[in-house]
Image 1 (tube, rainbow, N blue to C red):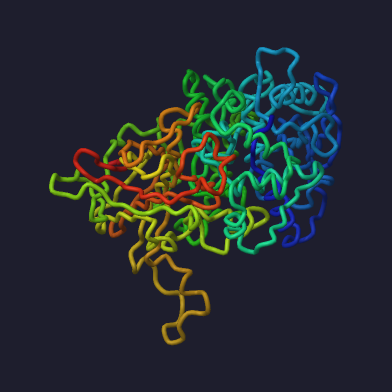
Image 2 (image 1 turned 45 degrees about the vertical axis):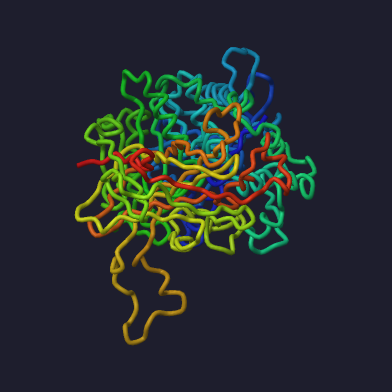
Length: 626
């Protein structure tokens, strides 16, 4: 049993801490005392736990607890890491614990989020957290009896899992970028379509050596070429892993949404707000953009005390823990330091209210940094009631409009999808997922690099004569066919900047420096939402079915929640393609019982059609705020 996850949080923390130590002056005195203990849990296993107590503590303080698979500090920080700065000002005892089976913690690391609440003898991340909190409040000197938990990615998951059975002393949590259902979305799959490069590389990193992160050594510089040369997915075990990585094997053994995946989908057990929770998501989170929204919605089913909050910002995975967060890639945020502002104005006051009994409770349900306008917005309910679902239609001539197609227009546009020449998901050469900086920001990359490929359809509006504000859940409703018996369709919603979006940053007489000309937002095609649907799962996630060749089908493609303004003078673009490689594995386009067992002969070219007629009006559904 395993749950694919996210290795980003702790490397980020260490990197930020190291940077702070390298650039800051020597401190006059230590900030914290560190004590390492082995905390016992109900089955006798002991978990390695580091306790950081402020050296100047004068009275009882609450505990802020984080549980991780990535290691605990060996010494107290010499300088305050950015992610702790705003919290530390209020005073906390920070506790970091290694999960069972990791580093010095005893037991077996199962990489699983399965929680069986009906089995009193079961141990899991929920019970380990409960038992650890119970031990901490009884054994950590000078604590005030209140515990909070927080964390990003895997640490966000271990935080969120406490919602299923929280300890009475747990008074507030902030799950940040937690996954909830790895077959439906987040790290490993997108509605059953495998995130090939991520799943494979993370499996090796996490399970090749239990005591360290192991990065797969590619013999080809461009990993796009390596994955293409690899051929069918079965070659990963045949040529490289040989069944040595359980993490990968469980994906191969469970291609469909079976009981294995449903048990791992822990959020299916959540139906109430059991602890005040600050859910945090990034609009451009390249790993876990979906889970926080699902936790928010499940907790909202029963929230009479209004303790379930949602925060979303213009961030890649975990960017809200960086020092500033004033841009992502080339995209600036209007002078806002969004990461610092989040920690200072939202995260710290949240824990201050519930753990220190100071300040005021939030009156909003959702707080977002609206991209495009670059402004923070609070909403009493999400989605806002004033957002009206509005159709944006794809037209046969490659345009977009809010007017439905007329009877005189051509029925469809088409392209040929060739698995032997798949569309790359970012510019080549593609670096390994980890360790690599390019992975963090690929979701904001300029999409002009594929705009003119014959296997990518682009639909573009005229320049907007007014701002178009979209706030809420987006989706695409395609009518499409394939000449094959299986297929993928990827939909991208893009904000196209004007050609004069910003002034040139160089002396006009000297011209740009090498590489500088491309570092501009002029004409930039900024992705706002992107997603894939796999045809074999249109009728059932549990039981795949072949498509009927050349028969139009309706494809609903969820595009998640966003808050964005397409500014006056910008254009709206939609791109549609059938490959997104190697972040999504290649669909053979010939139906096979399991793509993991497909052979090279199963991969065929297919003609794909997107219908734009009155009877089959492909469109996006946008929650437009007037």
